[in-house]
Length: 407
Image: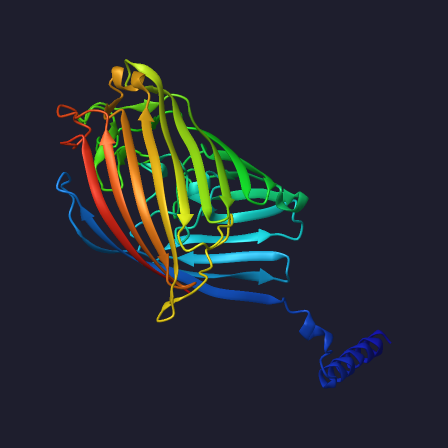
């Protein structure tokens, strides 16, 4: 009886399977596939550098960036991006992230991308106002790293926030310790032509070695600071390759910024700083604070309206019927290191660098941009006896050009 029942059940199973195979697949299964959108874009930048006689750097052409981006959405609630740059020598991958954005007030993002810190650092390289960032900006602002953030906006974007945690190792690097960085940024836009921002970032750096002149030591940041023209003006340690300088406590970074766009005018100002707590060489000990700041003013000579966070739209193209869009801008900047760090010989070089950049930008159309910048840097002293600097004069000048293609 049991055997008969077992055989009957088996035959019923085969019969059901045969019917199921003959039946057409329900149409509903096709709609179960995720809705995926994508957009391929990018840009390429071709630079020319002509350094003044007061600078030993070489002149010539350079492919500065050649970036390819694929970004899009999945089911309208997920955002993603994969962003590479074959022209960079610091790693092919620039960004790769996934974001859950169904709730505008609480979006979750994870992967490799720019940490939410600094207006200048968060501005895409194809949209910056001048060819080079302010002096040693990348030694304070974190730029790309691996981590996760929670962000959102309220009141139609009048208020935004972003908080997160990052490895503090930079891009394309695995986490090698338990330090990490916590970061936060908020912006307030009382009107659509004005925005204020503030950032704070902190992480443990205890026993991190800063003197990168000693062979084989670990370096969390690039501790040799250079100007845009490549002049080294500051370094941790005394340059003896035997003196080890370490952080005894933590690294904190903070900054504030403001941007105003009214008609053809654009005004920006920002200050950021980084403080290494308890830097010591085993004898002397003090905090080392690096501060960089800038202010810019630019005007559209051809009358186009400047809008915050939006690219310039030329009123006419550069062809036989038009001249494109032209903008004239000037930036004043300053970089300082606290005097006590020099007094205790924990750093060597120049305490302060002041710079001025004058730029002329032309948008031939929405895809082609040409930039011409004149840079002048002035150093607070000529440290001929300082091991950590290769400056031979108090000033340096350079004329830089850029041809940019976006697609």
